[in-house]
Image (cartoon, rainbow, N blue to C red):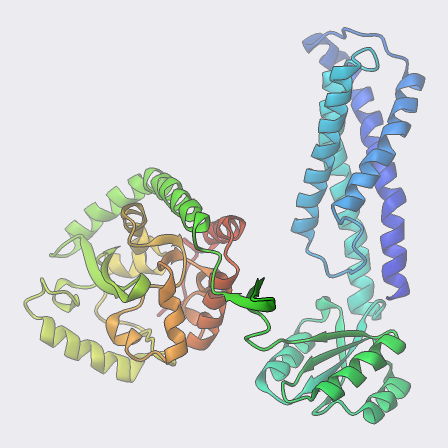
Length: 471
């Protein structure tokens, strides 16, 4: 552990203490401002000295709650928004404890205004102090290399190469690659440690024998080096352990979306699809009128896709193609439209793998170009979710001809309902290649939770109407 990290982690405790104390004093002072007294006269006469004594007794409780909530994490690379949420939650827990205590012993303290003001100010002061502290810590990390973790990479595959590139491109992560070995030679590791120092070793080499791994782990433990490894697909699976005939039995769980998980996700989908329909109804009405005035044809374009368990369904979208180019059975020129689309895929597609994305597509209408660029064309999919053919969050729904090009392992994407948004959409939209998109969707399938759905939906709000690249 770096000394700078220990220092900044330790100093957070007195800083939090000072900020909570300052919040309590500020709340007491605000209550005595003449303008506030005019709005809400005081119903008590409480000496400041007695008030401070109570505050000094209460603050250690908040510090304890902060510690239990993990707010004294040592690493500098923690995410600030998550830390802010933790501060809010921990301070709120402390508030609840105080409220319950006052309810039982009302004579101790009775000003609801001061209690609520101190809670709000404590959240603000603590968050601001921690933000300033993190800015200083990250500045020292990036500009003075104070607190950087020297990392040795071991492996000879694409994963370790991608990790090396990411570390070099993002110095704010707090890592520095000191070397990269193909094998776990203890002799070479000792030499590198002596010459450049090693704080962490990251392994991604599945061909390493058990004996080699054991020696490497023992060496790291003896030298106080943090050891981590990038697991294989099987190692990242979710396990359930049971007993069968006296023997331990490990079951690989494909997804939490089973039983009550599926029920909760469906309730979530119904609720948020209704919200989506209500809040986007005016935009959908204006879009429908614009499409009707701009070109002939249907307003809603029904595109056949493959959903859960390989079942076909129609995705509802606002039509952004000229009517004669729509790939639907209602189009009398369907064969010509298919041939033209295939020629565009061969000459103008910017994606690799089973999927395609046509750059500068000449089939779009004027209105269609605008609504597709800002994802307005996808709003009718809220009705797909409400009717149950799609989910709010899930893998992209793909066409039959795209699914036919899947490798066998890609078919895991068809084990749950496709989504209006998903991990891939908030991580790179159409810029990701298919394999990267598959890995993100697979992570979602294996690690689903309602909280993950909420996070993805919130991120989508910032992405959905964001201008796409000109494709």
